[in-house]
Image (cartoon, helix red, strand yellow):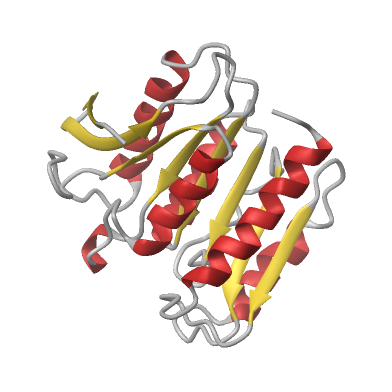
Length: 216
């Protein structure tokens, strides 16, 4: 899990990178929670997502967005953070030009940034969005959504009530050509305390299903 430093629009971007297990390995970019709420790339949910892709042979990158850890710059209300995500995906693609698939996964604010990135990168094959803050940000930009993916949410989430995520999911499910999975974990809160194992189990099962349908 070597440390990497990427050149970003606001200076260096600090990341952790795990190379793929073969030259044409699929790639995955992992995005962390809100920087103003102590979000960083070593958040337990973020690390779990990283390890799930890593264990399946993906070339996997997680990083600190601007102003977090060793990454330079200041919080930019999502605009600069989206630019950082695009820079990170560019780096990941340039280091894996033969990648068989491209995935984006994010938790909380990272899910919001990840879904925006998805809209700008039609080559994306799949996404994972854990606890997307759909009551705090407008997700109407997902029209149309270019890839199938998984929304995972906690049934006891009081920060983002499940009904808010279900509204987005139901809208996306009317779109032809993609399949949106939505899973609700009983007892889990927005922060997944004591439920990290559920993130591992549910996201892992979803990835295995998708990879069985279309091997990477």
